[in-house]
Amino acid sequence: MDSPLSPLSYQPYLDQLIAFGSAESRKEDLLAAKAEYFRLTGEVFEDDKLFELRMASFLDFYLYDRVSTLTGKTPAVEFYEQRLANTPPEEANAFRSFTETVHGLFEVRKLAKGLVRLRELYSGKDFDVTERRHIAGLEAGDILEARLIPFGGHLLFSSAFCYHPRVALKSIKAEVKRRKKKEPQRTPNELVWECARRALNMDRYRQLSVEKIYDFEQKVL
Image 1 (cartoon, rainbow, N blue to C red):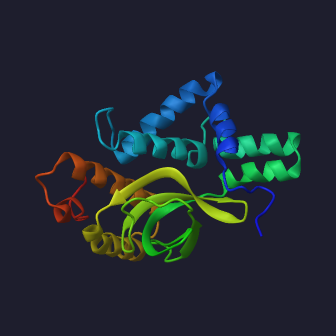
Image 2: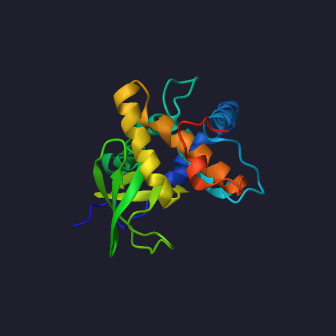
């Protein structure tokens, strides 16, 4: 049975969060966040094929992950706390969803009607994502960076994705294993961001093999 937040669309609530996060008073913080995101994942330009997806990923990073130097909180947490004080609990719960997102590198394990089962590569945890649309080209065994938003008793995809070639899965898994054993202080997001840089390089340096671009013994460009 669906929760009172169904039908399954967080978009009206997200639109309010975006308006809050992009207010004129936050413009400098927003620009600083964009510069930080480009440092982490590689700078994109309007003629890049990945431009729109990367800007969607940046917006996710800014709203859900980046702790503001002004407030010590993410915009999502700020807005939830504001709504918690000023709106009915059931509406405030919708905004709480944006403080509980799951972001990572995932392997597609299963595709079924209305459902995508993913395995997060760092934790090994499986997630069942409700997806009523057909995602063109997505198949079991694919690897992607995605963000999952809990909403109305379901997990839903955000609009931001970064796809990685299947042949890179083995090297990414090996790098996860190496970091967990030898560099446990490093966060899962560091690998997400590095892989995003490598995906950008794959689009720009077509003369290089996928294996070379996803060779983690080589420094990313």
